[in-house]
Each structure stands twice: as C-alpha cells, then as structure tokens.
Length: 109
Image (tube, rainbow, N blue to C red; front, top):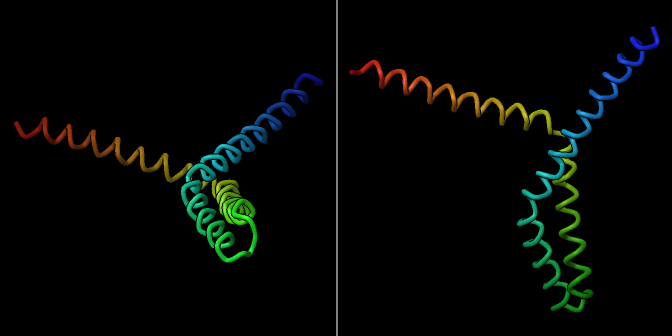
C-alpha cells in the first residue's frame, strides 16, 4: 500500500512540477518577447530624466525597463496555458492545411 500511495503522491507532485515548469517557461519567453519594448522604454525614460535633471540615466532606464519586463513575466505566468493551446492549435492547423494541399494536388492529375 505504501508504494501505491507514494506513486500517487509522486504523480501529483510531478504534475504540479510540470505545470510549474510550463509557467516558468512561458514567463521567460514573455520576458524575452517584451525585451525590445523594455529597452526602448528604458532609453526614453533614462534620456528624459538625464536631460531634465530628474535623476541619473541609469535610474530612469532601470525603473522603466524593469516594470515592462515584470509585466511580461506576469503575463506569461498567467496565460501560459492559453499560449500553449494557441501554438499547438496553430501548428496542427498548418500541418492539416499542408496535408490537405498535398492531397488535392495529387488528385488533380
């Protein structure tokens, strides 16, 4: 009985660990995706702060870029399942269209 209980518990922890890994994956992907926006926002805010004597460039850059990256990470964590479904659904649709196109091309003889 102990082995059955342990395997059931292990399966549950593996499932939650897998879910956590997926959340972390999409959080990191989202952070990379928003990086260009974060850099642009940081440059604009840092340059504005430095030119108007509102503080050093580095502080303005860090404040703006960090908030954009933080928002991207949160979005990836919260919407990872939806993103996964979209990617898988799009890939399945593309594969199906390719198969259908090849089949129709074959029938045209």
